[in-house]
Length: 172
Image (cartoon, rainbow, N blue to C red; front, side, top):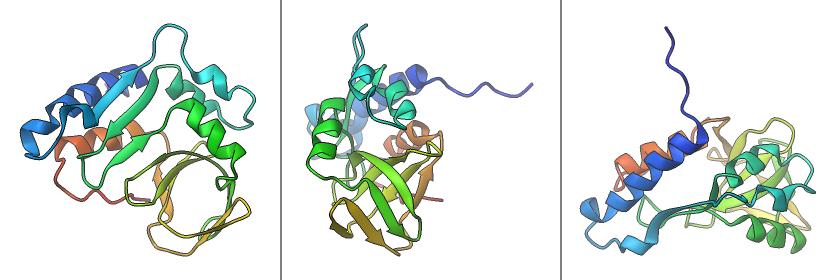
């Protein structure tokens, strides 16, 4: 019998426990800098209801307000839903050119200037390394510009937390 994939809630619970344990493995880690803030019953996914193609993010934000993993690798952050909306209003990249041409919703970052974005069409989560941005368009042919994980982004973050000092490169 095939193993059932973990639910978003299960992955967030595991990620939360691992985030709390980061200071045990990283001497300089601040316990408040590594946390998963779970959502209350209301959820914040509805904040994105008017954003076309945001279904994958709405599922995540129904369970989670924010993920801060400042001391895991170079850092990994899933921003609050309200910050996603503010970034979109301020002209955050909404399309990409180069290795991949996509319509995206930026929702997180890696602590080094890279962004995690949801592809509106496929629901895939892409990593955009630091690159040229102009008028809402991100351009790059960098090898790291690629799919982080289609539906397994949280599982990838869990793997990163299991070895917080390792460099965890986005993968295709």
